[in-house]
Structure formats: structure tokens, C-alpha cells
Image (cartoon, rainbow, N blue to C red; front, top):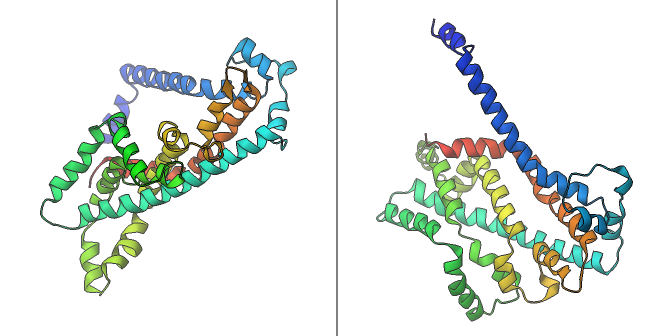
Length: 291
């Protein structure tokens, strides 16, 4: 009876209007989001002079389309060598940032979730409170600390400051809170130690959370520009976003490499998202609601 009533309500004019409006709204949002990506992709197949003349416009004129930008990017010239040096630097920084961040934040969240101890809630509140402090306020103290540790112009100096992310800890804690704590009791009865429980039992259950936080951490590390710009001084250690910005100078702008390189720079994050898409959606859904 209830199913019949629900089915009848789904075909009412008001419900149809809401569905059409909702679908139209999300379609418009998708177009707005996809427009810059499509414009950039088309611009990467046009000469730099066309980009200066027309900007990032949706131009499907085949006569102006060419592969010369990508041929130049992969041509082994000086700009190409610098580009892939920056690309390698970004890959290294992103890889170690993501791996270390996930490991550290998982064990912090595991301790805050699975164990009971004094001041547990206070510690978690302090962790959450750090999310309300803008990076611009912390930037100068962190920079002075990196100088004191002699980590200026090193990859370690770029990576170390973001290893304990409050948002990642919060997400892991919310996800782990939905797992039954009886798993710990059963494992302890069977004689398992704490390391085995956290790594062999709980961690595999948190794969969706790792995938979700992995892609978000990778995006943040890959696109970061302000902090690496402060720490890294030598051009040989620049990350891709910083390196691409150096192509824009008062004496000449190499838009051919800039646009093609920017589009090729999207590839790692895009591939990671495609591989872990299922886990990301499951993790976001599970982490959003406790229980």
C-alpha cells in the first residue's frame, strides 16, 4: 500500500517539475565546470598566437588545430627537459606527501577512535580547532621553523608541514567510528597484538577512506604553489605549478608549453580518480554518516 502511494507521488506534476529543475540545475553546473577544461584542451591544440588573439575560447575550427604544442613539449628541447624535471619533482613530492599523510593521519585517528583515555575529546577538539586557523597565519611561523631546521630548498621542507592534516584525521575518525569495536575485542581474545589489529584487521576495512583522502591529498599536494614557492629556491627543484609560472615573464611568454603542459599535468590526478572512483564514492558516503 505504501509502495503504491509512493509510486503515485513520484508521478505527480510537482514531483516531475522538481525532477526537471534539479536535472537542469546539475546539467548547468556540469557545463560550467567542464567549460574551462574543454577550453584549455582545445587551446592546447592551437598555436600560442591563436591563444593570445582569441584567449580560452571554444573554437572548433580545424584549420587552427595542430599537434605542434605537444610535439614541442615532448621534443627533448630545453623547455621540454625543464618541464619533465618539474613534473618528476611534483610526482615525488605528491607521492611521499600522500603516503606519509595517510599513514600518520590513520594512526592518529585510530588512537582517537578505538581507545579510551583521559582528555581524548579535548585532544580531538584541538585537532579540529586547527582547521579554523588560516594557512596565511601559520605560514610565517612554519617558514621560520623550516629555516631553523635547515630544510630550506629541500623536498622535506615542502612535505613535512602538511603530514598531519586535521581534515584527514577528522575524516578517518568519522569513518572508523562506524566500524564495530567488537572487532578489537575479538582479535585481542584471539591473541592478536595492537599492531596486527590496526594494520591487518581495521586498515583493510578503511580502504574507501584511504582512497577518498588519497585523491584529495594528492590534489592538494600536486596543485600546491604558495608553500613550495616559499621553501624551494632553485629552479631544478621547482614543482610543476611553480615551473609553469616561470614561463610567464615580461620578456616572452611561452604559451605553447604552458597550455600543453598544463593539460598534460592534469593526467596523474585524472588517472588516480578513475582508478579509485568506486572507493572514493563509497568512502565519502560512509564517512558522511556515523553508524
